[in-house]
Image (tube, rainbow, N blue to C red):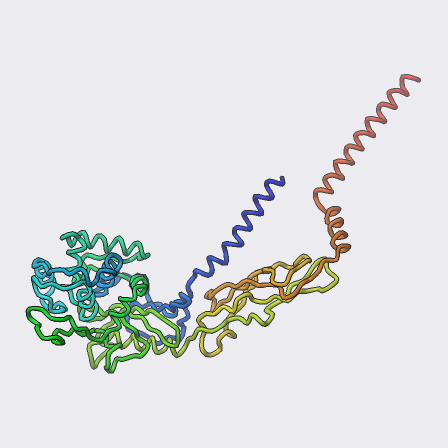
Length: 440
């Protein structure tokens, strides 16, 4: 029986410990009052808290277009980030045939057949003007002369970072069968932001590719970014630190990240129709600015709890010193909150016992509080005792004795004892009667 109880207690304890951890990993969506977007799919995540602040069809597979180059870039940096200047590649002739088979108007960084460029230049060429030839040159090198080998590497890496709705068929995105989801594109871009060189490249408005046989004068071979949110243009936003565009047909994608006042986000918009930008050709940038303006105006990172103030109280047993003890949050729960209302808009769900047995030490963890906004969990914090509470030994002893006498164990012992006594009496009486009958 004792062994069974120990196993049961251990199981329950594991569940109690595991539940807060699971809650912390959950994401929340707080976008009930967000502006309407024409983008068929979108995903905006606060990187400081992993809270999803806007979501629209984030698991719907759509054409990736040149967002495909983000995966090509991720593989390049994973393998060669320390060799960007020491390795140079010569553009193989066949990759141009592959490009022109798919499009006669493919974006280019003006790298010609047989020309040699460093990996760093190819990185800039892929990400700024979205050079398709640069992506193919990298794929040929990393695939050992086989584009198919490289595409297999892309799909393996997509699974490794957690993508569930992404398939690549080429290294640049010209083929409309390159598909992704808004959430998957977020995962790929988030993996890339771990590389400082990536942040530098996509945050660069223009880049000098240097000199070659055609560009013999320094400063004449300049490539420009397609991300007009970081350039001196009508689309500019100070908070945008970089991103990647992509388009096929009558729509545009944009994957970007943004930072302001120490708060950072990744935004993904897929297949935004050109109607969203009637005066230009940057619909995804227009809608990115719309949603991110709203995000920075609406939310801020702030404490949801005050560690200096009690949040609830719980009854205390076995003490004459105090009937209750005040509980304080162990963490101020810095999280993403609405600028208007802030912590007052959160709902608190307590996981504490009905009473605590004395003695209690100040700082003892005695429960948890889970915070939600509009039903969405934003985090869980430990609750700690705010003061010491001593045990009254007499009350404790009386309680334990009373508990023993009211326990099932005691009742069973009493019943068994009574049965034994009863059996003994019956046996004794029977024996006496037998002896008496013989004497008579």
